[in-house]
View 1: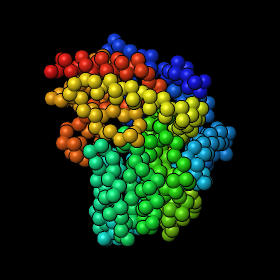
View 2: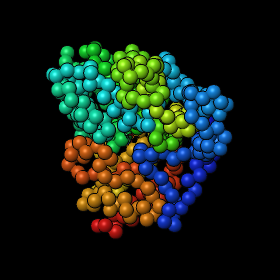
View 3: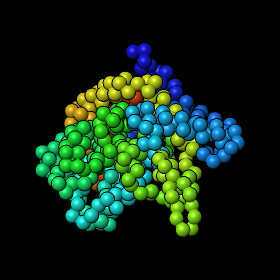
View 4: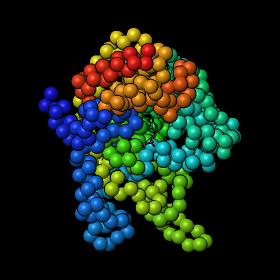
Length: 406
Ligand code: PMP
């Protein structure tokens, strides 16, 4: 189609033309981090070459230019996620920071015996902060179990919900398996019990445009580096009433109204949660990455990636001994697999010699590996700039690795 020109798209990503170990790079580790288009790289260079300055407090021109660009990026993110207000968009260093900010804030909201619900499909960053919160408050952590197909057991979720449920946190898409979770239902059912919901959108955001108002979600967190932006920047969306209620996460400059040694009053949103000099350039570049993705369109991205997923799944399953974990019909372009009798790490190491980048291991989701009783998987994760030719090279390399290792 006109809107989706793969040649043009690939030309936007300088890294895609490099060689690795003498072979053209095939980058299938997009769930770990995405690659960066020239438009975003140029925004970073432009910032440091032309208007690098600290924001919000300067009267001079550079500071005002940097402040304007940073706040424009916040507006881009607000519009993208359809937040009602700019004040509800908090810049963070990434998903992990966003989750910890909320978890730490809830320490004053929870008491002993309250219940919080997590899912079996979570990344460690959406497990550990809540365990720490439960230890601190005496709240009880409950887990929505998963099924063999890598989906959440929604009947079990209904049974876990109770009048004691205060918080539910689930990822929108599982990084280890690619499963898209039924978050709208989860949010609706949790709200019926008066519980707040945090959705970890780290893996969904590169593929699915979430509308936080339509979802009626309380918190939604993402990382810039998974969506063609730089590392070290992310966004926490929070409903205004919640953000007003929660205490600040860090104290420092930028987040105050008045400071005396007797008492400090805090700045309003979003600054209350943005202590210290932020990742100014990162925020600006994140905004450019969002513009870039929207120009291609999330509909076109999802449709193309789905084609890649089906094409690769079919070919992989033709290799004897291959098991794919995560077989939900609702999944993003992630294939987590093993070959019988072969350690995933060995496959990853051999195919790297052939220029192919995949991830091997537990993908920061050990409970999922425990469920399947495996040490880890080989995970190939696709982006809109990948091609069927790259999948052919990948499948050929996996076949070669299998022969070498059997
Ligand atoms: N949640 C999920 C589902 C993820 O995939 C990741 C990144 N692998 C994270 C959270 C953590 O994101 P970050 O490392 O950018 O903070």
